[in-house]
Length: 236
Image (cartoon, rainbow, N blue to C red):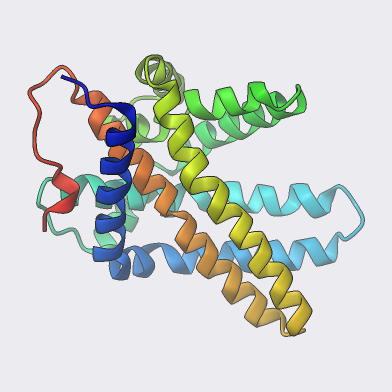
């Protein structure tokens, strides 16, 4: 029997928070170097192309190149920990590099579709973000190609639009707004560019919590036909 939506959301966010805080050290060791490089190039390219369209698109292109590595590593970490495995950071990065090309293609398609949707009165972009929420998990964990990953994500989210929407609303939006506010405060109180890059890296790391939340929801969704099981992400 499916839980009421409010109870399901509470369980997912609680489990995700426990996992994220319990494994924050390894998440930081694996992901933070790549997040720092992304933040560094964001700053350099934005300054170099200030006042032009490239100030937006050049950092976006660099982020698209880096994103698949730390994202695939995080997804593998969550899956392996859920199976009670103890992966090393190097194993996670090597595994992520092997999925770099398909995840890059998938992320590029997703960014294009969501961006196009947002340009069409915003709501189509939000709807696409919800429907594509599980695509990366299918691609990394089951080795499907980007097209199949998108199809499977559409299938998985068909009956769970409200769940995914509420999870994004309760996690992504507050973290995104807080990150923007932190960046503005840093610019007001200091002119130290390195400090600003470090702060942005920290908020990007915190932003990975959204991936953990969505992965926990993904676990619920794909296990629905089976008998209820304890939440594996809360175990050691």
